[in-house]
Length: 172
Image 1 (spheres, rainbow, N blue to C red):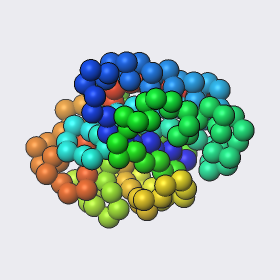
Image 2: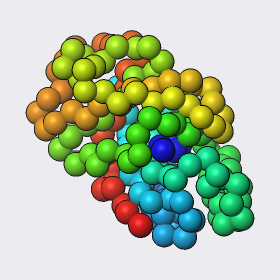
Image 3: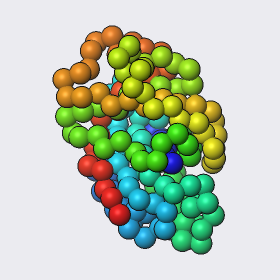
């Protein structure tokens, strides 16, 4: 399953510190919370109310009920950074066992609901269904864009985000 955390962060003076903290936080989740197996962070390169996104690989919704997660994950684990997170949402999606491993020269397309991905990517897309947490997004589709595969028309597709990795995929 995929656990998606997305938000906006608009404090340029603290952005470097925030990224440093966030990398430590996501690494902590993968290394210490049972059921977290991988994580990778992204930034949307087209317009989005929540341009920062983390994709976590989790064993299932039961992970969020564990004492370890309740003690070290979720909204209470962000400390003072929580005040700076805008449009913050969390979703757990079923539809694939593992998050894609997106290299720095690749992109991830994420379509909301029934928004269509570009032709070749629509056929290869992974369909995801929300099964927990905020559940504001019922369905999404994701597809990997290989290096050099972005086209100008992708930037004008309603409901589709183009995500660039800002960290490598970190595994347990």
